[in-house]
Image (cartoon, rainbow, N blue to C red; front, side, top):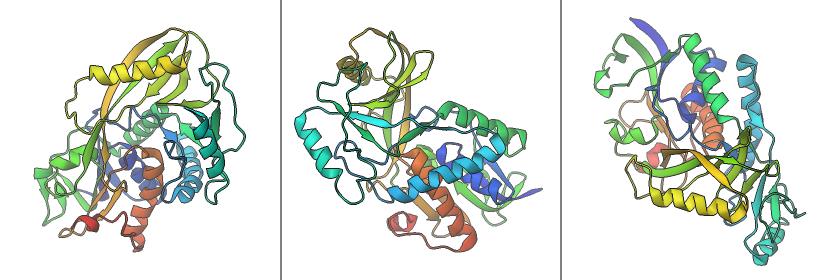
Length: 343
């Protein structure tokens, strides 16, 4: 019987960032990955401290921004690669009133460090009212991050490439098949709804479409946002997305969502473009827009880490440390994120 400190179930942002905490602290673990493409794996990876509809920020934005550079420096120490791409988000204004609101908010405490008061005009896309730049925003190289981390985990024999069967958990002996564990952390995204231990937690699937497009011109070197995000991947191939749909629960490509993206891109790109690929996945969201962390109400070495929503990089990186400190160092969880709020 193999003995480990942890089993992690799931290898999206939650599972991978929590695995990093265990690597850093020299804990033994196995992480289960069914090789399905999750919302994390096709996400934009944008790290944006501003809610671009209201030009406001979100809960614990400063703490998450500060920790982002710390955790990626730690990860770089063993993958030998920096995944942070220092491109700022720029928001194309829809009208003059948005510019006025941006300027006003840029003078507020808590927003002045993010909302750049000096407007810019983009040269490569339609922006008749100009654009505002978000300071301290960036993105990560999503494809390289997951590829490298999964390779590292596999090479070091942490990774188990198979579906996790909840029915094979022996709660009395804390074993799963031939693995004895001290703790188990479920980082399953929307699959949490099929986990009998945490199926009562209201994780809501939010369907998203994103495109890979080929452009015939080179946009400005920013993460450009009007209705959706546009940024360069490589060789004039661009990411454009994503949509949000709480009602469509099928895995099929939705033509209306693709048309929404096509129309949004046509608004800002006057030259032709070609859709190279369409990706679909489901984000794990929660109605109160807070991640879900903590222990099972009966099985106290069973934990959940879920509900990262559209801020997977920020929430996954920062709250992985919070969860580790809760389990190992007896730090309290704030009520806003504690799974106990649903019991």
